[in-house]
Amino acid sequence: MTDFRRLTGTLLAAMGLILSAPQAFAQQPDRGDEPGLIADDSYQLDPEWQKQVVYYRTTEAPGTIIISTAERHLYLVQPGGRAIRYGIGVGRDGFQWQGLVNITNKKEWPDWTPPPEMIQRQPYLPRFMAGGPGNPLGARAMYLGTTVYRIHGTNRPDTIGTKVSSGCFRLVNNDVADLYDRVPIGTKVVIRQKPEL
Amino acid sequence: MMRTFRGGLLIGLAVAVLVAALAITYEFYDTRTLKRTVRRGEVLCGVNKGLPGFSIPDDKGNWTGFDVDFCRAVASAIFDDPNKAKFVPLDASERFKELQSRKVDILSRNSTWSMKRELDYDLYFPAVAYYDGEGFMVPRSRNKETSLDLADSKVCVQSGTTTLLNLADYFKANNMKYELVKFDKLEDVVKAYDTGKCDTLTADVSQLYALRLNLSKPGDHMILPDVISKEPLAPVVRQRDDDWMMIVKWTLYAMINAEELGVTSENIDEALKSKKPEVMRLVGTEGNYGEQLGLTKDWAVRIIRHVGNYGEMYERNIGEKSQLKIPRGMNQLWNAGGVQYAPPMR
Image (cartoon, rainbow over all chains, first blue to last red; front, side, top):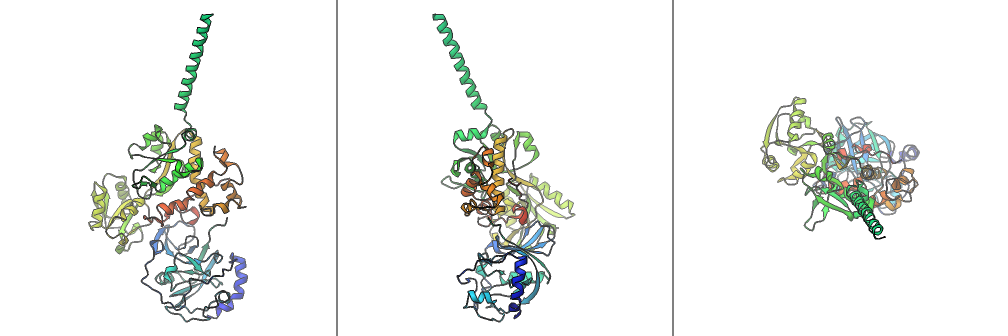
């Protein structure tokens, strides 16, 4: 997981090109991160955030992931005008981004090395945390391009549907495991933000 | 002398009577709904007597719902006051005749837009407010993802409806066998499904979500995402009243465009300061579209401030924030997975 740090340099350049990078830096601690808390897998999501097959019309090919940060939904495009829709937690204001990336790596029960910017904002975070049920990255992680951002699980299912992260997209562990098994490395991921006034 | 005076008086009276008669006739036959509405000081909205999510009064007579809110949006555009919408509950059988005979200014009553209805009643459906269509509800335990997986199902349906005909066409076209379980009354259809006499229930999707609420275990049932028929629900106005038709049509389009541009009831004051041309035309800081409609510059601001954009109206009444929890589906914006599409305001 040292590649987190190694990638930070290239990340900044890459983000300038393809992403509208976070501009503001919130001072408040990240309410979504609670290292060590064991995920409550019996937590019942609101119907809006439960995994379901929905009507979805798009020109993107089946297998593509489309993330709508404004809606807090992740769509996995299916054939026949349908998509599997998952509820997600997204970046807090100033930590939302958009662009086109690919899944570049996949990890089960990933370790967590919070990137330096995150440590700077939230000095109380551990420098390293081994994968497991108390890890904020949860059961699975899918790496987005060369960024520090991931689609990952969570130990805080109650944060699904909210905007609390530092730019990552979180799903409950059951959902992230389901998605993980459906998408290979190389999967196209489109991240859409709400329009600006 | 006396004769000329009397003659003059008679002529004067005759003229006065004629003018009064003309004025009354004009008043009575004036087809311009906007003028009549403004003079009256309220919009008369024909609505459904009670359809959860779309239009339903509470015990104090306060109306809520998607159709109700759309009418409030029209009232807001004209009067800057959503409470200037007056709701007139109408039966399904009489609704088009009552609009035709000017009992209401607008019908906002879950009515399917069809060619025959426009022709038969001299009416006009300005724009689709909600794309409905026939769909299927199944127990989650059946583990179905699409309606093409429904071969050999036992389907509960109400007899004598187009729903039944669409069902037959759909299964035939896809070479799927099924068993029909028919009832005359909708409540019997639902009861049969709830007690397991069939494993599939078909009706319009909006109705399926409402019916699911009354099942013994709503959470154990799901509505498949597919829609097998076209039921575009739209407001209705009279033909040959273009000014009014334009107001109704662009009220809906302003709400859809507002959602697409990210303008909401919460950030409308921010939107007024926007320098983005599309936002400026919507909120009236550029152009004079409002005046051209016979309204004011800020007509769309009034709508959004009082009622919200299309998405807000949807979520509050029938979407995830409501009891019904109907996913946006086809009614999502065209660039976010659905087919809701408004022409540009330029």
